[in-house]
Length: 151
Image (tube, rainbow, N blue to C red; front, top):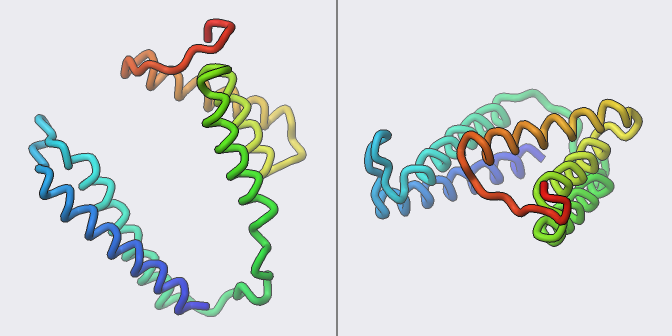
């Protein structure tokens, strides 16, 4: 299974190189006056670095549990509901607004990670929604969809 992890790392490294090349073609600009490709270049640079770390770590790592021992469909019970929650989030965001939609999404995602602590899940969903709304809407002046209740 180590070869699959290395191949995955190589894929993301190659993808990062392609994005960096295209970002450079668009123009990077400077940090004070960024060009059209600046953000994507920095993001691809981070992805490339993390890919290299993954490749090196996988290459020199000891043998751990393989996918055959865990089972090939072990992640499906969490991945499929997460995907469905994200699709539903995209559909209801214009209808219910950012606050309520994001709170519901975060509640579901936190519940998929630790389904037993509802008070903690509710608190984490509220705090993460409030922080993102504070940062993006109030500090960065981004516009979010407003629901029927005005938030």
